[in-house]
Image 1 (cartoon, rainbow, N blue to C red):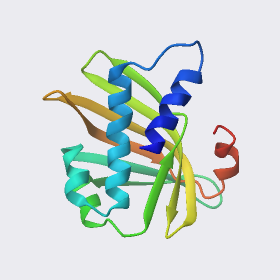
Image 2 (cartoon, rainbow, N blue to C red):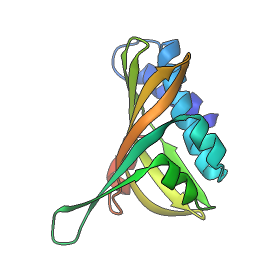
Image 3 (cartoon, one colour):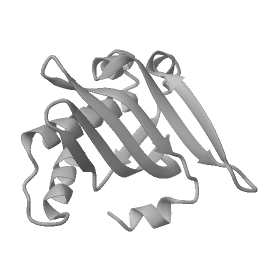
Length: 154
């Protein structure tokens, strides 16, 4: 909940003084519920905010240049949930197309058992289904050395 309040404050402070819309608030809240479910090691709660067969994609830099791309279906992601995860985002930006589609983009930090593993940029695609935002897919960078740079945006 603290993150949602911080996200709303960031939205209010970003750019012109425009209040976050109810749809923006709801989209951010869906992503936060995903993070909370990960932290609780609760696969059913992850599934509740995600469309079936959604694909999650991580992009990591590799030594010597280039990238490593991993893709996983949400169902496999749920099977591989591990305890001790904590992901926090800040300064989320929301783009809406009415009540059809939303994207939530934000810098984030991932900790495992209280230790920072990496930071990066999250991009969540959401679709409105039966009046609720659901995660249709996600892509993120996983950059071990990016935390100092990305934390500046807090």
